Image (cartoon, helix red, strand yellow):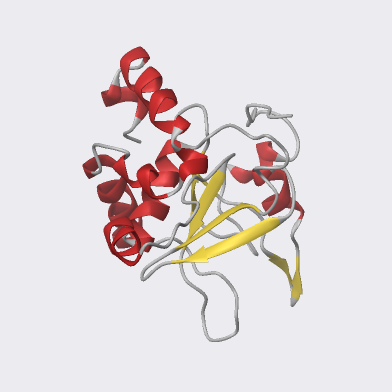
Length: 179
C-alpha cells in the first residue's frame, strides 16, 4: 500500500543533510512536490540499501540515462503503487516512444511509485551526487513534455491517459510538475 513519505520521521528525517556516505538525489514522489535529499549509500566500503528501499517502498531497479540514473520500485505494478507521471515522462523520453511505435513493438513505459534520481556511477560503481546539470536536465524533460501520447504504444497503459487528464485538470501544473 502506498504511503506519502513524512520526512520528519525515521528513516527519512536523516536524509535532509549531506554527510559522509550520503549522496545528493532528487526525490520524485508519485504524489507531492519534488525535493533534494541525501540518502545513505555506504558505510566505509559496505553498500547500504535500506534508505534506497525505504524511498521506493521495496526492492530497487535502476534505469540509467546519460547524466543521471533513476531508482524505482522493481515490483511496483504488482504492489499496486500509484502512477508517477513525472517519472513516466522521464522513462518515455529515454525509450523514444515514436521509434518503438514505428517498429510495432510495445513497451510498458509507465512508472509507478516514488523514485529518486542520482548521478551516474563512478569508476568504483558508487552513485555520484546528482549534479546541477543532471538536475536541470531532469526538470527540463519533465517540464517540457506536455502530453502523455507515449502511452499509446502499450495497450496496458492506455487508461493512464484518462488518469493523466484527471490529474492535469485537478492540479495547478505550475505547482504539480515543477520542483
